[in-house]
Image (cartoon, rainbow, N blue to C red):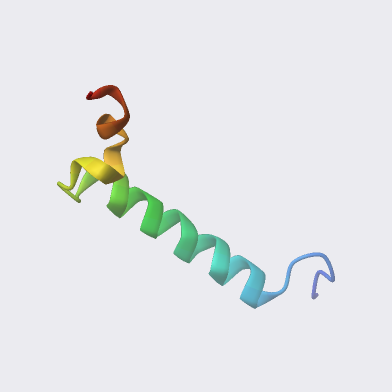
Length: 41
């Protein structure tokens, strides 16, 4: 029962992208990654 729409590599790349974005959003303390640096003059 394979779906031709989504391959395993597609699902895996989506999961990796989700995990990395979560780590960058929640765990990395660099303000450049949070977007705060745009508000500073």
